[in-house]
Length: 228
Image (cartoon, rainbow, N blue to C red):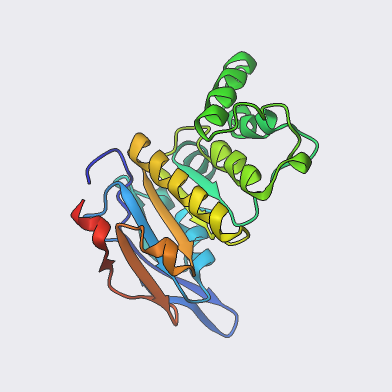
């Protein structure tokens, strides 16, 4: 599945007090292109996403995204320009409208107000919330809030979307809707999605599945999606 998605070779370790949290996180390898990869199980899943998203630093090894080693990049610029984040809990600001929440990443990039408003409207329409632009997160359902969070993650056109249990706080029907939305956006935008989950129904939709056990990433398992 070719496209503009990020290549993600990774060989990293992360120390924690009393031992190693990640001992051998050999991740996707040089052949990774746009698609959905899922990491299952293990207590270090979020740590792994944080390392790839430059929210944390490794104690050994390296991470290369789009042919560039993260340690040589400006972390803030990398996060703003290359990576989008979706978390289990939407982390929306309740005093702002849905559209204003989506605009937050664009403010950091210096996007003009008129362009921010136009783009936030288009993104919310894309995730099915055209009628909720001015709504407060406190008036939205859990699924609607997660859709706003996804739109916010796409604000700066990321090549790589990191999703940490994005359906974990939702009921099964809403989870399925959010997953299908992520898959559609992945295909339309030709980006890479690295998604953490414990839900087998989610992993079955991925192009490949990685299992994180005892601080090590096991070899990738292909799914039916690989033949598409």
